[in-house]
Image (tube, rainbow, N blue to C red; front, side, top):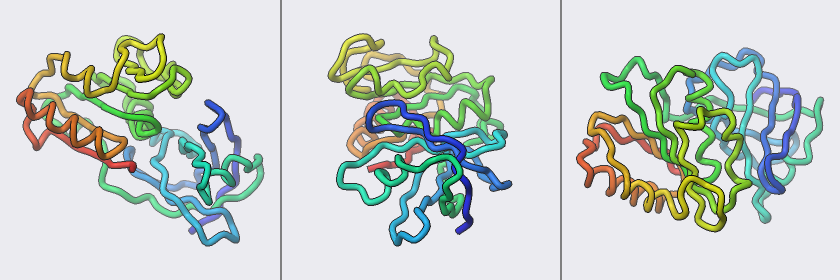
Length: 214
């Protein structure tokens, strides 16, 4: 593991924040994750890279877990402090040039939006639709970074989104081109349900890619 200095910690909600730290020429492919560890601690956790491949810094999106041994300590880090970084790891890699169809659907719950933020930041000309499911409006993490017409915010416990209900309820109502490449990231229950919905709409299994967060 290498030590990287913290550049900033920006709070998005009371429990969710983005850590920006030195890149130090760490090479990754968008969609991969890194392992973070507080120096001197035995605990380490994996986080998808939130920043783009071409940024001169690295960012991760973190949700603080009350009983968590890492996330709470990460939140307290100040600029100049050091963090140990290992990686990158993972097979949820994304390169649009490798797909015959250039239509992409990204489906996320909670902080599962993180790799898609990296996708869009790395490839801003993408033809994509992002469906993001959270409970509250404040959890629409940095939606201003996406083209508004390409995002559907699904809220299950608040008003003000594009759809009231879960991402699965929303996808049931949508017509999806069978050539679409579908990427799913979030909790396992959502991924299983969305997989069934997409295949039921005629999307080939080979066009569905997933990364389970929990």
